[in-house]
Length: 180
Image 1: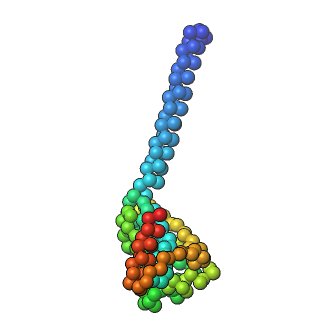
Image 2 (image 1 turned 60 degrees about the vertical axis):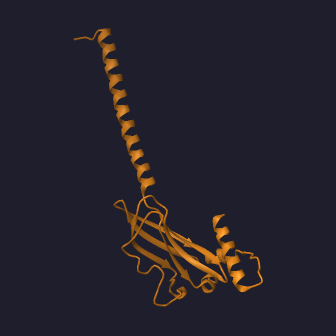
């Protein structure tokens, strides 16, 4: 049985239509996967650890954990290398040592004060490893904190006559700096 030119044209049309449909299905599946990944990335928690300083009457150094994401997370563990214990304000309160199974809502932060002078005199970089769960997925991030970077920043303060006024002045200046 031989094919007529009309049959060949119809077969080519059917094959072209089939190939076009398969390609369209593949593109649709890839687009759906990419959209799903983008939605996951925008709706996931982003829990970070960073350092912050204030200067009211004397410089203070803080470690902050904050959820910058759009959904909450449960912290599984926080580890620091080198050990942060020697820099605790109180020896019985180690920063972030009891944070396992702690929920952190979007935008929520926890702040811990450390011994500023001792911490900032360290030459080592502190690495904070944090593991947390959000949206049924586990995330692991490492954040370096270099105390020398903050120690080398100079903040000029306006002087006032009285100690009370100086404290208020420093506090207001600090608030303005935080808004920059």
